[in-house]
Length: 492
Ligand code: GLN
Image (cartoon, rainbow, N blue to C red; front, side):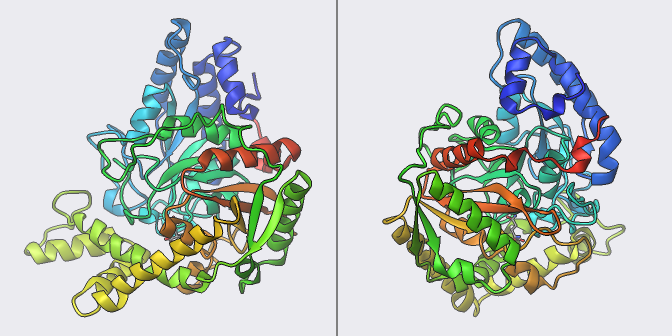
C-alpha cells in the first residue's frame, strides 16, 4: 500500500489486527518517507531504523499470537526530551549531544509495553526553552506548511514530523505551551494534560512544577489513543497523581456539545498583537460550536496581564536549579583541558549551553538569590495562586474556556524576535501551566498566507476526556483536521 501514512490511528490499529498490512510494512513505509522527505523538514534528530524494524517484527509476532494491544505495531516519534535506553537523548543541546540514558522514561517504557514502534527522536528547542525550535543545537526544524517558517516550539519536531506524515503521532511536553503552540502552528491536535496525569520520570526537567507530557496527533481521536498509553500514576514521579485513568477512546462521545457552556474571556480577545485572521478563525470555530448546541458565555480573567511576568520568573527560577546538574562532571559535555574545577564548571556550561538557556539560568539564579528571593520568586508564587483562583472562579459558571493557542500563526525562520516579543507570544498558553490545568489545541482554519490557526479549549482539572470529546465532535462536523501540507502529499 502506498498510502499507509494517510491512515488514522484507529485505521492503523484495525488494519494491523486484521492483517491488512504488517507492522514491518508500515514501519518500512514510514522509514522510507523519513529518508526521502525529512531532509527538507529536519524533524528528526535520531532515526532508529534498525531498532524500529526489530520492534515491528516483535509486534507482528505478538499480533499473530493474539497478544496485541490496540497500538501494537503502530509507529511513534518521541520528543528528544524523553530518555530512551541505548538511544541518544539530547534535549536539543550540545550539552547532551552524546548522552545515552541508562533507562527509559516512563512514557517511553509504557509505549514499548503497549507495542508501539519507535521511529526515532524528534527535534526541540534547547531544554524546551523557546517557541520556534530554532534554539536547538541541531538546527531549525521547518514548518511542513511553509518550509521558510518555524513549526513552533518547543515540541517543534514532534509537530513537524506528524504534519509532514513522517510519524502517525508523537509525544511532546508542555511547560508553557510547547504542545499546544506547535500543534497550532502545524495544523494538529495536541493535548496538555492536568499536571500529575502523565509521569515526568525520565523526562528531562525544565521547570518541574509546570512540565507535563502529552500527545500531538492529527485528531482528538488519535490523541485519545496515545493518552490511553501515557496517562497514569507512577511511583517513580512523586508529583504524579494516584487517580483512576479514563478510557479516553471509549469516552470520545462522552460529553455532548449540546448545552456545553464555553467561557470567552473578555481580556483574551483584546490582547495587543492578536492577529486579525487568528481572531476571525477562532471566532468562526466558536460559532460552529454554538451551532452544535454550545452556549458562549463572556467571562472575566482579570489576571491576564500578570501571566507573562509570572511565568518568566517561575520557569527560569526552576530551570536554574534543574540545570545545575549539567556541570561537566556527571553528564554530557565537558570542556577540553580544564585548569581547575572552577574552570571545568564555567567552560563546560558556557560552551555546552546555548544563549537562550544561559539567559534563563542567569535570570532564574538572580530571582532566587538572597535579597531578591522574596521580592521576585515569592511574589511570583503568590501571583501564581491568584491566577489559579481566577480560573477556578470562572469554572463555577462555565465548563470550558476558549482562547486562541497563540496570537499569531507561525513566524518566519530567522525572524529574530527579541526575547520579550517571543515571550509575549506565550500569553494564551502559560497560565494553564501555572494553574496546572489541562488544555487542547484543535486546528480551525488558515490565515491569508495559508498557515494553520488553532483554537484552544481549557478545561477544569482532570477533564481530559471532556476536552478530547468536545474536539472529537467538532472534528466530526468539520474537516480542518483532515487538511494536509503539500509536503505530506508527496509519496516516498
Ligand atoms: N515558549 C515557552 C518557553 O519558552 C514554553 C516552552 C515549553 O512549554 N516548554 O518557556
